[in-house]
Amino acid sequence: MMQTVAALTLLRDDAFSLKAWLRHYGGQFGRGNCYLICAGADPELVEMARGCSIFRLPDDFAGDIGRKRGRILNNFVAALRCYFTHVIVGDTDELVVVDPLVSGNLHAYLATMPDGRVLTPLGLELIHQADRELEPAMDTILGPRSYVRVSSEYSKPCIISTATNLSRNGQFARFNQLFTPDPLYLLNLKNCDRPASPASTAAREAATRPPIRAARSSIRYQVSALHPAPPATMTSASEW
Image 1 (cartoon, helix red, strand yellow):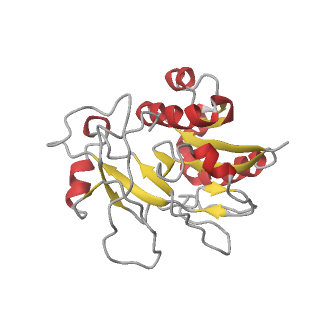
Image 2 (cartoon, one colour):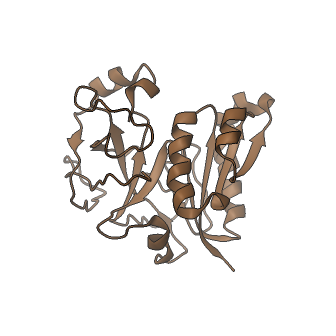
């Protein structure tokens, strides 16, 4: 019997993001449905991910992981699709969430979605406004962080329920139709906490448009729109 959903990621040396990834997907799907490909055998990450299925690449191969990332993830997705209707695949600092006004649980929402598709959530980059948000984003992300900006870069085809191939960076899928369900968002956590982010975060933020305030309203994603998008739906749900 097919199970509903599995989550898959490939990582190296990112304990901050992995903690949020495990809390989010492990809490909703169970750690037995979470799959990690670790480039190298970092004992801290392996211990954090106890209960998940972990595939460890040898340390000698870790430096070459960028070129082979797409091939590795595509092969793992194909294998997991033998047992799961949907496979969520992406970086450890990316979390698929569902509008809480539509469904309180991502697993329950995906159980209502037909298979044979590639779903592309709307990308939202979570931004740390350090002068306004003083609390660290440790045990929860939303709540301490409530500013986002819409990002086409992070609007990725990441929920797979059909035969397809993803590009190495995960931004393209070999599929002939675009499905962007309104209630689904892809949160990127790269800049959600200044102390845990790279030193280049401030310079990167200065070069892009100001963030928008998150509010409780749905976004209807228009693929061709070039104008700033309206605020995205957010909550302070602890599992996020």
